[in-house]
Image (cartoon, rainbow, N blue to C red):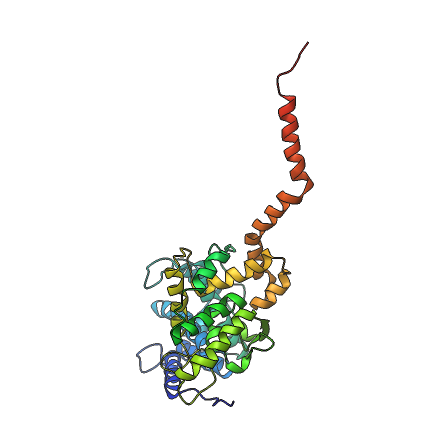
Amino acid sequence: MGFNRYASTGGKERKIALELRYHQPLTNGTSPSILEKRILEYLDNQKSLGISTHTIRGQRFYLEVYFKWCMERGIEDPNQMTMSLVDRYGKYVSQYRNQVTKKVITPETQNHLLISLKTFYEWMQRREYIGKNPCWNMRLVKTPKRIPRNILKVEEVEKMLSIPDLESGLGVRNRAILELFYSTGIRRFELQKLKISEVDLVNRTVFILEGKRRQDRLIPMSERASDWIRKYLDEVRITLVKEPDDGTLFVSVRGGKMDKSRIGDVVRAAKEKAEVKKKGSTHMFRHTTATLMLDNGADIRHVQEMLGHRDLNSTQIYTHVAIRKLQEVYENTHPSAEREENTSKKENVDSAPGDTS
């Protein structure tokens, strides 16, 4: 079966609209500053390198925060920036508040702001737009490794998987989505853009094309997940998809690629109906998959490859959760645990009242 490689007209229009957003001027002035010109040129350059629209939108936001800070201080040329001003901007970032929640942004988001600025200045230095790079020695915020708390129990997972109404086409689709999340630990955006051609139901593998940081990987999936995807493809997708068909695996009621927010809604609805109280939605399955694999003896490097982590440290956070099972095994099998019990009994015998004559 062949598929048209071009997205639907609606999808194209949305993509063009997103691209226009990061082409728009940062100010309403008729004469943009040198700094504004450089930022817009940098974003255009990122697009030419094949960076995703989603990533470029984020970069624009981070650089817009910096641009507004500069405008308030009369800084219109990147060459006006000094190391001391970079330090001052870092302090500003440390107190920056989310415009919606009004809470101070997380250390991770602070680093996104700082790294975007550093990368921007490195680009300008390569282009010889600036002499010295004032960001070369920029200090990032220390971010503690957070141990995941929203690990699902197997019973909780099974309860969530049983929620979709299998009498409806959307229920079958949603069951296939949940099964794939649980089986593979795939990221939401990776699932969203999966093509039918990237899912091998015979060999039970999923090819992730350009996952995070544009890394490809081939991962296994369970027989059960494969069976539900096959059922969805055979019975449901054909009734939903609209022409031209671009081959996207999971489609919406309108026949095109599902929005990421809608995919999140599928997981949240199952969680709420299953009365699972843990926080999170799609990423909760990712945490659970990694932890259960380690619990059951998987090599950490295999889990790293499965999740698509570039750095092993990112995978090691799950070992702190998986240690609970190791502790149980230790207490039941290690000789020292047995000796501790015997010693306790011996102490009780020794301390018992006896004949002192």
